Length: 473
Ligand code: FRU
Image (cartoon, rainbow, N blue to C red):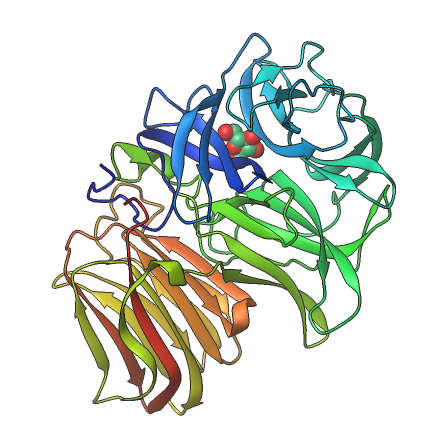
């Protein structure tokens, strides 16, 4: 079980069949719930259900029975879940707090918002008999409700993707919703349809103020093609989101091609999100079996002022419970053109990090190399960018969109962290202000991890590399 050729060992994937967006992320009584867009009858997208998994630590997951099935109102598209602690909905029937899922019913001709509730910690679900709770106003794309309790205005607030903007709705009870405002038709990137919003408060690191961050997935239109997540920083006054930045400012959460539909867990004191680790450009063709797609590593979120601009900061949750062997523990490494650092490995499950103490090299390169194939991460000091080159990373021909060299702007490399799993690498740079997530499908098993300097020297401090245990044990 869970040991197929392309089965991620550190990331959640369903036992079998198709998965896309994370849905209904909510924490309750020691359990992190992860629902997800799921097609239980096929390896490609089809009539959508909500699959379900739970975890006590966000690392080890247990798949549970399907939570929501399509019905006469339509398929079950993306949405969120909340704990209705004060029973504002009146749907509580047991000693447990009632968990309420708010999702899109995707009918043949329209999309509308509905709810379902569970009184047994998410194990069984009842759809509300007055569905839908928000009818379609005449919009083709009208979906992916994400709900939170807004303390200041004492109501539930829903963000909803509606064509080329995000609409906000308010409700006292999760059932009766009032339209509040719309944001974004003139802001940010519009290369594709807006999907999967999330609105969260985040403190600015080292400052007293808190800002509101509006997260919006967009497909296509990413900087490297296809699906991508953008975000806006501003204020939310209970009615409107007011963006701090000029209309043409675009902020990408992750420059890689495989981080989409990311949203945060509800009912947690600290913001943590997770994304779908694929891209609509080729998700249906990736060569894994008997399942398609995995989620990212859950990531902690923050906001940091960098050169006067507020940036989202992402860092992986603590992976130390999975440390198996330290291959390198907090050492200093000097890399010269003639002298690279190499580690031969059999298992592709690593957590690595280092600070850059000094660099005279034009490029610093991290690669995962087989006899015939390799994935390369190039930090190009002169071009001021990071490139992930997966053109020769193994199986690439399943889609003409897949083989690529993807880039991310970066002035100076200060530190890096990466998580390597069977079919993915997640790269966090400079304390997490720049992130890239990419999947790949190597043909060979043993590989060499190499750190190398081009035209000069790179000195790394606190360089650590840990082999990680599989989370499926
Ligand atoms: C995003 C998305 C959502 C939709 C779901 C359908 O990937 O297109 O907008 O609810 O997938 O599976």
